[in-house]
Image (cartoon, rainbow, N blue to C red):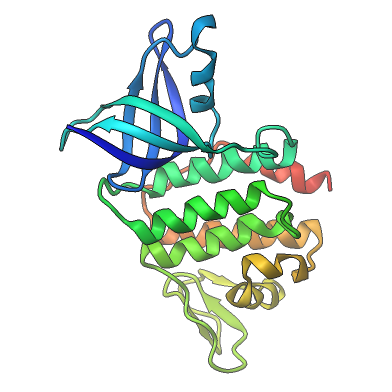
Length: 242
């Protein structure tokens, strides 16, 4: 049966001479893998958009429940990306965020709220967004809420954030997984961070990376299968070169 759905390209792997298996987070079916033939040929240059992480698609797909690999009947770009594929910093961040999403978006079922958050977030990131250097912090912090381990906001002047239990405390947690006072000030700012005020989060490059490290440690503690992120050193280099 043919279905119409929107999709977000996460990544792909080569398959034989000219084909790929592309991982797509879809609006109707969650994360799915699709076999696409003859992508890497001169006659099918239009299919190369499937190689670009964060490409936003309108798709017609054949969907077989429980099948490991699905098929695409037809697709078109829903929102042409104007900056992500062409700006080094955004391109690197796209690879990083889609690598992480590939590890945490495991559900093969509809989640319209989560899909909408990711889809519209990418469209905004691709636009002339003020404060784009802080987008990944906003995105990863908000994504925790959809994944079921969103952090609790401080109710008083608490100096430590317990990464394991997801809340603030007055004293250092005995297990040792917490955010220090130095980083905690910026961590608290993430609770009020929105797309339209990213430019108001003023961080030095080292502060931004320490905050990212704290967020990733939080993910590691709540998602056992996250593992190593191969694109992280590239992101680190970007911050180092700022």
